[in-house]
Image 1 (cartoon, rainbow, N blue to C red):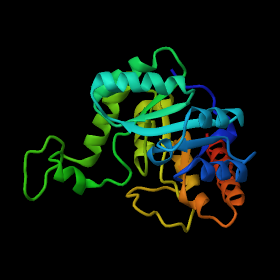
Image 2 (image 1 turned 180 degrees about the vertical axis):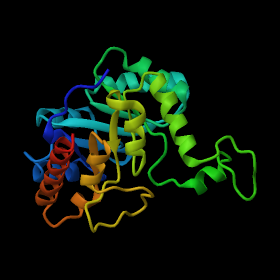
Image 3 (image 1 turned 60 degrees about the horizontal axis):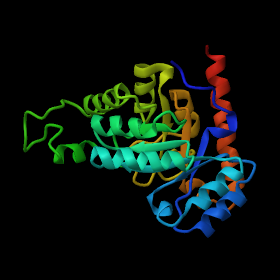
Length: 252
């Protein structure tokens, strides 16, 4: 089953990567009317309260709570239950299939979407070799032959447990779209407009390329946060999204 149609101005998710409510509120003011979806990560989550979530929703905006939950099943279930009560739209988990199952149970029948992170966008083959998942010069007989094998296995296990979507960067956007079709919500982090530094992200796409590859939502942080004019920077990305959608429609 495919997910609900996505409103055009909801496809860009701006990361509120700041340490205080005051700074986050400046983002909301700067981007009012241009951005309708915001990501709250661990840093800001530790500084906010329930009232700030209500403030964002009061501005008719959506919330992506990016906590990458990974704990014992009962803790995840109870934490997701609380997150659903906050009225957030998306929530990330990082654990195994049992974590995914616990998150889905904690969500219950509420509209919160559970997204799993098969591979952190900052991780490479070397990181998985160090964990023993991939073969290396020091170790043979690892469980997975390639990075792609590991990532797809993780994604398939999560989706089988009832997760709604996946966090995907680089080539994995298209791989996941081809594998799961329209039933998976695909969110692409670390998106960088042409000419911007990719920073620690090992796999990064431009807004146009990410949408063309099949991403539903794009997460953008520093290119907007550090722009001289945040509003103009966000609008340029929104324009790129429209161009990519139109190009995709024209090719069908």
